[in-house]
Amino acid sequence: MTVKNSSDHRKPNALDWAESSWLRWIHVAFWTWINPILTIGHKQQLTEDDLFEEKNIHMDTWKVLIKTFWKNWLFSGLILLPYIAAKIAQPLFLKEIILTINDNSRPSHTGYLYACGLGLSAVVQALIHQQYFFRITRIGSHARIGLSSIIYKRLLSLPISSMIKTTTGHIVNLILNDVGKFEELRISIHQIWAAPLEAIIVFVLIWKQIGLATLFGYGVLLLLVPLQLIFSKQF
Image 1: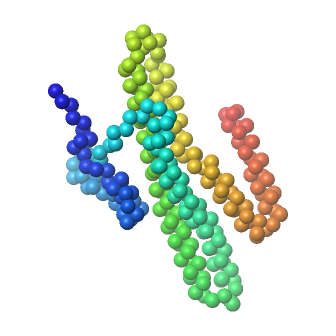
Image 2 (image 1 turned 180 degrees about the vertical axis):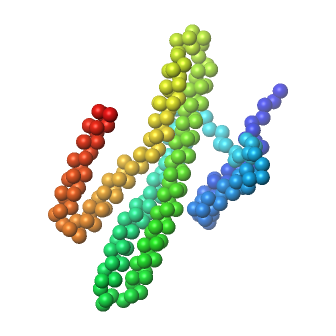
């Protein structure tokens, strides 16, 4: 008897198709790649064959995990750069709009340009914010599912004597807590470099405006870091 994989009957992954060329960026930005599944789900109840095909990836080691996800991690990190730029640009555009309103000597068309820039930066920030969280959530889910599969596969290969020594609570703890940490890591992994980068840029901009007083403001922020560590250990 031959057992066929259900993924053999599935359609190619539309997200991979949309990401395969920069000419199809509109499908990624506005989520139109998921329309086929939404259309089928509107007409009938979805089955496994209606989903996109899955890649045949066997994750056995840390090296395979890194090799599997490093491109996705890198891309999700790169799209944070225009997000940070748009986030910082908003108060700068707002500042120029206020200066244009208060200064009658400035040409009026510059105010409209700054207003367009403010609106455009808000749109870019909204689009990238959703794309970023979608991608890191997808990576975290794939990592959690892959590691959970490895645990189950390992349990099935254990001898009876070892299974007797392994409690159900220990298995549940591995899957829910230990493996779950990988999914939680997805949220903060890029903030390790993005937060300091944004803080440095903002520091320079504020320093140009108010000078020495910037140090006192950032000094308070630095004092909050050890306080947060202390309170996190207490509670």
